[in-house]
Image (cartoon, rainbow, N blue to C red; front, side, top):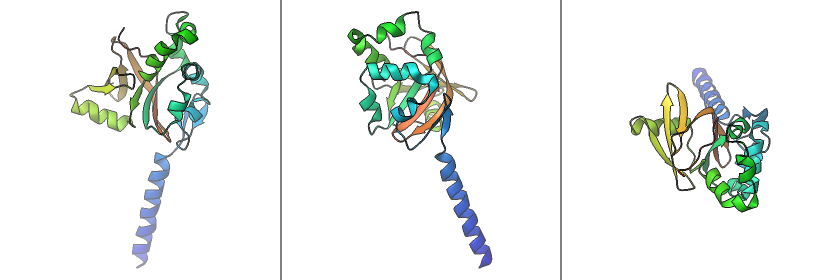
Length: 184
């Protein structure tokens, strides 16, 4: 009887511990990203994503990304936006370019919640590549080099996932080191 009780307690601790680990917050841009908050509530706190947040606001996509989802977001850092040709971000943030900005931002979003394990499984099933349909209607190609996940846009430019599995209440964010662009 005592052994059974100890095993029950150990099993409870293991299950509770695994659940707690799965729901753990991740640090991004110097701020904790809480799995109980939505994509926007977390992103606004990351000092590495101020350009992305400004772009999401300018594109009128805040409500969408606060919605139920679930969404998988490949979130470029400020450094990723800085790699674009000089003046690109400023031009995209102008009201007259809202449609283009919306297309670029939604090109970084896939409907559904795809964590690293799910993407890796899709890559394996696709013989080394997984084609991900974006909310904008374009396609991203996911592939792995060793244990590192890469995402390639329709123009052949690749971004490395630098922080994976940042769980949100309405999806998951994967931080990327480049801005992905739909086919011109």
